[in-house]
Image (cartoon, rainbow, N blue to C red; front, side, top):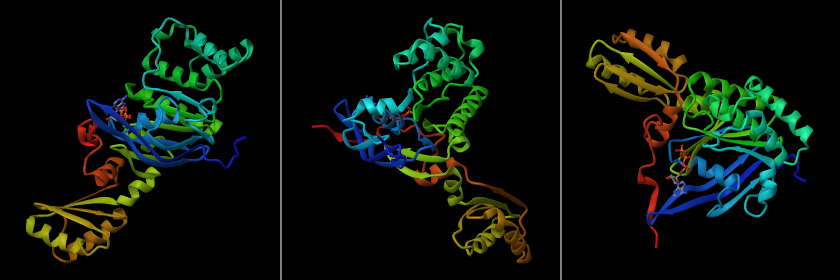
Length: 334
Ligand SMILES: Nc1ncnc2c1ncn2[C@@H]1O[C@H](COP(=O)(O)OP(=O)(O)OP(=O)(O)O)[C@@H](O)[C@H]1O
């Protein structure tokens, strides 16, 4: 039996390569990841970063090329059944479009997991209530809205009360209201039932808002792993100052460069200073500059966003990045 101290996920050197058009695509490279029970982790990265491939290896849907992965203490290659029993998985395309009624769908999935008829019915009703679907439970699945279908998918993934739930881009395609609604349900599932959640997203706001921990993935590699707050505060605040003209701006920049750890850039009569605790430092800087005869005409302080973090790490904005470009191609296959 799994000891409570066993991490729910542990990967070492986990790697997946695909060969496509005679080229080797390194979808996931050398991933070392440990997730403890009860965490809510978001894999954040652009399209093609390797998020879904990682989830597919962890759920036994595809085999790693090299490296190891254990889920709930079980090896994803040698102990696939045990791994599957411990997890729920909602893939990107799960939303069923058929004529079965929502409740029947949940009941049949519960039956497939070995629950008796009455236990399956009870479980289905509990889950439908938990996801605000009771009033829609008698409708054919094909008539549900996108948000209702995603919630039904998550409910189905939970029929066997898994310790760990994987959600691959759960809110993609949902309107903002349904997205927030689903995010709230996911957080509740994590907080109230203690289910460990690993979800993938390319929505910065989603990762920021709901995850305890953000694993940033780019070109198959993990490039950051921390809470959103720490990732952002590590980058500092952006202090933007305006001046009467370029000469004042140049003098102000010279003064700002004396601040420990500050990174300063001048653009005409504007100066931007990226520095830790910029919000606290800004008033003193403005007072100093005025005393030195270079008064600022404008001041704005903005905290870092996860996009700033991504930009800092990769030189690209996550909002504009589509890494399906062939930069992750390692070379021609033999
Ligand atoms: N079956 C496959 N055959 C060939 N290449 C694949 C296969 N599956 C994924 N890839 C490639 O592996 C890389 C990682 O893909 P993956 O789907 O894991 O990215 P992702 O981060 O989940 O992206 P998205 O946000 O678009 O779902 C991409 O370059 C993708 O084209």
